[in-house]
Image (cartoon, rainbow, N blue to C red; front, side):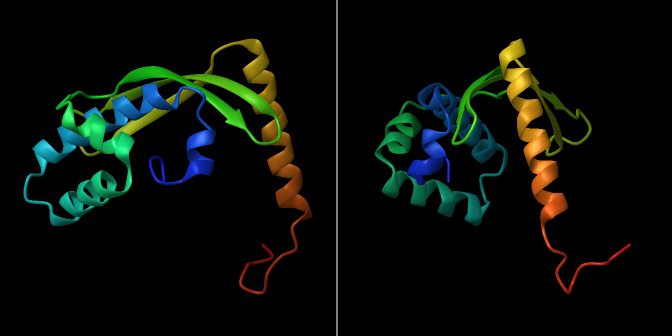
Length: 134
């Protein structure tokens, strides 16, 4: 979605920066799992369907993504800026804990608004026949 869906791409005001980080991390992951056919298929699809991905992949950059910033553009509340930090598990490299924190008070306020909107939406949503009433 990050490379192939225009709506997803438009959510990131710093898309090119994040894209380079994602591609370098994907290359690191591909190096860890060189025989993973599904991963190779994903990389092939992205390279064929996204010129941006293909160009970034061709640079050969390899890195882990452990810290950074995201400049998001939410469709209803506008700009939200967050920092992220990824904590790696030394004994289990496939498990990661990602922490996102608002970069400034305006983004913290915006995230609170989104939280309230989400709660209100879930409270007003009718219960389906497959959900429990407990």
